[in-house]
Image (tube, rainbow, N blue to C red; front, top):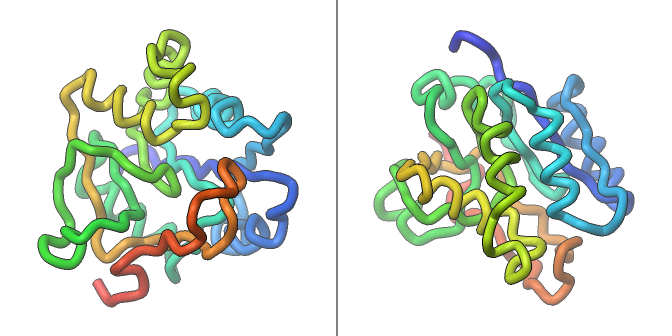
Length: 186
């Protein structure tokens, strides 16, 4: 890996305990705090924070596996020019395992190669579905990847899990949005 990624954590004020757990594993992570109860605004500022650097974008309700940095960097070293997703909840995780996919879902924890965060930030300014999906970070990332005809890599077993907490974006979402493979040995 030529340039190690920066780690960027997006957080809301009520999740300081979860943020602290992530920072124990990633003490040098850049923290982007929600300032107006707007997930998209927070994500756009996280993209700005990444600039042209390779970056791992993480939400504050992610539970990291042991040695997350080391394991994430090993995955990135295998595919440094691809988007890599570290969380999934799909049945194919159990039947297929790690794989290429074209339907990006869940922006809980994922890697963007050098320059991609800046390109995605530019795309966001004209993203045609913003009014339809004002908090749709994963929808926007998926649309951007499709517009560039780029698949993403899903890592199985997943390196992060989703904490069983109420969504800060939409409290109607179910709490049990957990990985089917987190915690299984690689």
